[in-house]
Image (cartoon, rainbow, N blue to C red; front, top):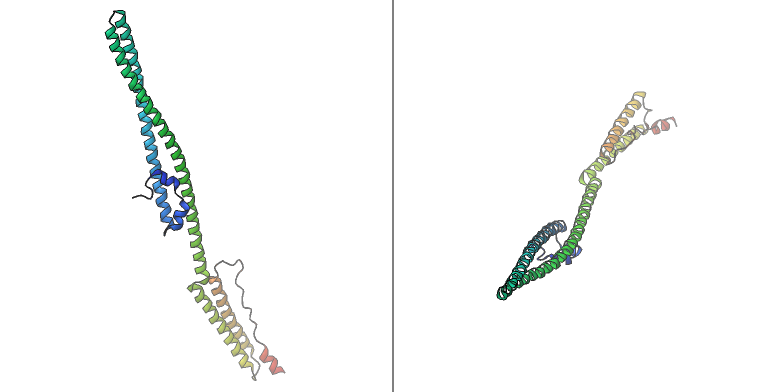
Length: 244
């Protein structure tokens, strides 16, 4: 059984209320549009049959008018021959044809009313169909927007992002340990040799380069500037303390 039992049900239906009550609005709107389209085809087919019936009736009326003219001619001929009885019989047949033509004219008038109602229904159905299609387009756009928001939220707050930031924390911890180790070596010891300072610089550069590369890969929007090189400077606290 369809959503609508009659054309008038579709015309009187409130599409918005139906969608608000539906568990699956997208599926409901597809069903509504499908049934509206099918009903519109049926109404137009019925109107076409009505028009065809009218044309057939008008041809029948034309034939009956010819028949009436023929009986009128025959009645006149009978009177000219003093056959009043034949003239009356001919006029009776003419009246029968006239009655049949009048009946057909009445039926054509009724069909005219039906066609006018069908035309009005078709116009209203088309308006309802346009409304339903507009709602369908709106639902599609809302669904696409919701899916895009879900993807963005998963990108910024998803498991992969949390894992990336956890790796950031780990690398930053490694940097802190390296700096702490360097500072601890300087405490109460001899000044660093040139080789030690250069080795320390290389270690810091490698850690900073790895951290910058990881951040560049994990950032959702690509950066227009190249990753910065090491911003760490070799600690001089130990040397200063030794000199002091």
